Length: 159
Image (tube, rainbow, N blue to C red):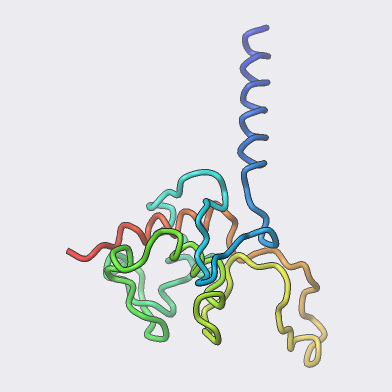
């Protein structure tokens, strides 16, 4: 019984430490070019989960704007954003993390959504429907989901 209690206590402390390492959207530090050097979740990303997020309409849905050869099983790749093939060779991990979290820090005026932002939105829904959410809104992706997408993007290397 003591061993089980001790194991549960250690697991609980580990979970608390993992949560403490997560950076809240309002606390993210971007460099002058929009890069984020440190992990947002405090844990490494899972490239397989990142691929799922990129194809899932209720999550990242990256393929709706970007073509990605490695995700050919997802239908209807978009042409609004650049092709992501080879992106892991062209960008550093910190730069990709910044672009996924909030591309407007790197590309002023981009139409790419900020996936890890909770405030400062322009909400026209209030004027037209009265149904726009109030801030702070939850981010589109969690810190770990950002890390997962970045881990997948880093696998997309030029041959």
